[in-house]
Image (cartoon, rainbow, N blue to C red):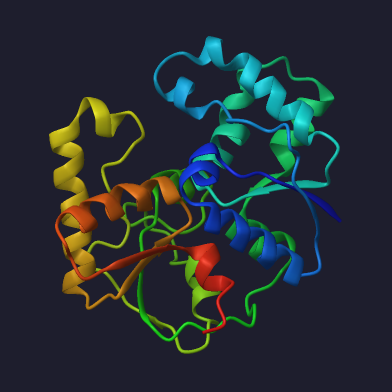
Length: 245
């Protein structure tokens, strides 16, 4: 299969190591990966701020960049969710439908499409998962605590196979971190308090490394951790799954 690598703008600008880890991980799994150089934003920031109509050009450019691939894979649940669920603002051509259908979050692609769990990774640390709202409740990467479903988690399934990794259980397993994109700008005080609550849960659960499939949420938590000089490290799940410590 031929995969188009979708790297969200904030990862490209601020966390390039996450993009590199995603590429290396997919190549280890025998996937042919291409990075379209013309790719830009998926349009989510405009959409979240109420300017969906203004984002049509960006969304259409995304389709043009990725329409020839068997799958489109990105290390961001929120961006992938935007492509799959909010590209209905475009005329639903065959290209648009195909791109929406074949766009996957990284963990979802590895687990559901490739059928892999043990990726040969090694990471001897105590790890807590932050399950982002878009990934969990949008893409259904796992069961939600507010529903009476049987427990499952794509991220847990992959991390449990990592050699030496101790997966810690949080007290509030899938609570929002408070980031919410522009919510953290317009409702700063609430956003910060929610983020601090999530961080304290990880500290109380004896976590060393906070991970997740959405680096926008992790960026929010990392900023609070660094400002408060707390003993936690933040890493995207792609970095852990690609690790061989």
